[in-house]
Length: 214
Image (cartoon, rainbow, N blue to C red; front, side, top):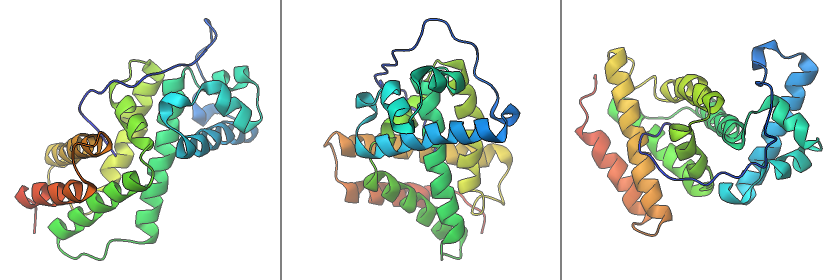
């Protein structure tokens, strides 16, 4: 799910001072791809258990049963690694939508149901809020490329069906607006500034104001 508002997230990597650029995943051998995926799944498991700020790259290496240097062969930084972790989490949400499609018929109800399910995913696993926000403002070029490429394409795909009658610019604007609502309201809820019920109601009200195709 996309975000748009800057938010400060701590990052501690303990990374070596000099590293070669990580390889493009498309260029990996099956064995290398499996090793990279193992790293991502270790990061995913750790983030479910504890906040992003409390997870270090060394923890991920230990969880994957690999040397720290091996992790840095595939990921340039903690931000790069956890952008990939967030992408895997987002992809899990996307596959769940495909396996259990929303039951709504009209586009507004369909868009609302998808957004509500996105909120519910953060309610169940709130630690992923920090990685969502981090991915939106990272200065690491590898993490930024992943966030602005594959992560964004997944976000558009999640909301593609109810927005299919709109222009590309309008679709992008609505996805960004939903991302901004997730960012602001989930952040407020986690900070104790609002209730989760108000997060749901706010999203429904916002979508109710949108001009959508019939």
